[in-house]
Length: 58
View 1 (spheres, rainbow, N blue to C red):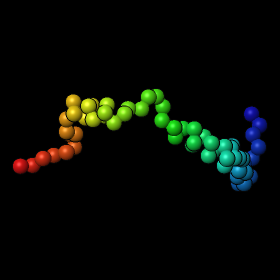
View 2: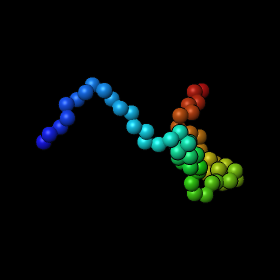
View 3: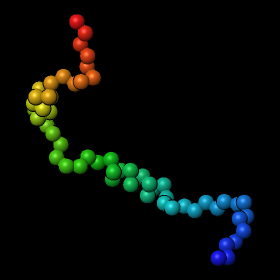
View 4: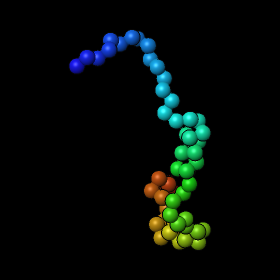
């Protein structure tokens, strides 16, 4: 194959504009699915109990 010799010069190519990147971040930052309400969260926490990383030394 005939490949050009490397020139030592790197040319930057814009893949997306700053506005495109901001839009992508904005779209991905939204939560997906149904969000739990406060009552449901407290019920689940009560069923699970204390987190394993909380150590009580008596």
